[in-house]
Length: 436
Ligand code: S3P
Image (tube, rainbow, N blue to C red; front, top):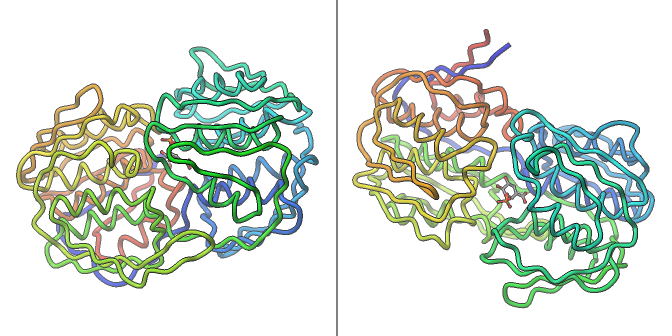
């Protein structure tokens, strides 16, 4: 069965909406809760396929996990050294975060394991973790071209490394930090630009000593984690679709509640503001070691901008939505320094350029970015290529389009945003699901 979205043009986004829990934090809450001592109670957990894949993997590694039930999960942590050898291949589904982070953890265990995933994940680069982990003593065999599956021969005798990340990637940083907890010595990882720091924050919350000195994060092996309560904020990456939708749809006035506002994730707000968006951040507070706030978004006349390169890692998952904003803005938007977008769940530069072109926009892909001339959007049929964020971004384009849009291959929206269609429809998007 295939799932398509049919979006009727027009409408506006209004009301108050809480989008599902943060995907990155949900993954980490299972991973770290599993190897902590004691019981971790998680609230606000994302019940999306990616985070559920992580939970299934830890169950296969011998961890008792209850839920999720209305966002509540209980993880009965086994401590640092009691994961069990799995009896089957560990299926990461569509989730790069599951594969890369869990590979770091498994590299240090006294047993072997194999990680695999769906067709999209099987196209994604894994040498970026396999190579630095090998420097620590890990034995990871990749599939052809450095892609999944990953066959990991566990080695409990890893050694610390000092490593400068060649790409700004929180997944690589986190894989190394997970391995480093088991390694002899102090591991130091230097980032070329700041990336999301949820792993570091959660490690600290669970009592593991971790230090940041400028662009370097350092951690000594041999420590322990103590279970604690983890509250997952709403995912700013999911909220981003509503931020863009409300910005481009005249008459919109929507409030997104309890959104994670970690400064390593708020690039989308900075970029939309540069474009002239009307975003008001209120009720800022702290929840579970992460800043959260409510974000009110009203329609505004957007203008094209040159996106500052330093903001790219801070908005890395929000570019499909931002490209839709750019297509509805006055003037040209230019993105550079974002080659990473080509190795996400799809080649987001090419796939979005094709999608926007099908809707009548002028979008020119470049090696490491895109140029988009703002203007009017028509309608038409577009392909999401099974990429959840492409599907949701193109759905929001319907708010500013002059004719219906059909988006094909949308089932993977459930990886990060279960209930997207219902929530978007409640807010005012004229969207319908078509199953064939
Ligand atoms: C993630 C990091 C990002 C992001 C992904 C989730 C994470 O990937 O695109 O959706 O949870 O660490 P990179 O760090 O590889 O850019």
